[in-house]
Length: 206
Image (cartoon, rainbow, N blue to C red; front, side, top):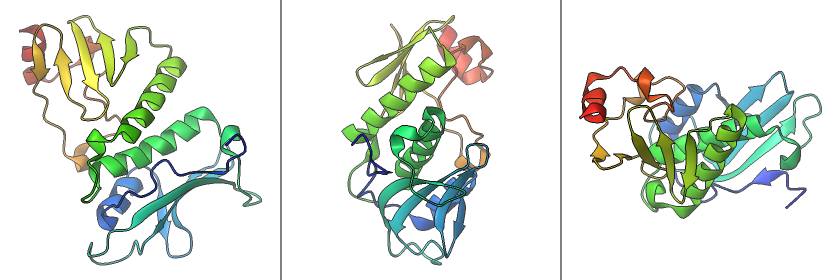
């Protein structure tokens, strides 16, 4: 696997085409008849491609495409790039995008929130993000990200996204509708003092 040029991390997942395209376009991906789904990284001269047996321009979701592989190619030569040579931050961003698709646009079959593969992937992504951002108050513990905040200690389940506060229990955090979201999908920041939502603050301080 040291010289692998593609990842089958999400192979086999069926997704809703219209929702998948909408999600990825919001993450700077492009879709075309010729190239399918791609995300271009101009600074690194790399192109990420998500392959699936699908007609992304279908007017309906009657046929749910099955994801196959994720590949990276050199933007100048269009030759495949080994995964080990793809910058970690770039690789994590692409995997995070596809993880979002699997979580939000999946159809039938395996629930990604309960999928061990998805939890493991998120564990890797979060661990790498913690290292890159040098965050010392967040640690990975089995299927949870545990946060030592100023308002208490919290745990975020890497599968469901459920948030728990120590000695209090689950926090009722209603997800923001996808079209109103930005690029941050975590329930809250590692710096809980920056949380402004009054309903969440009431629970944290209660």
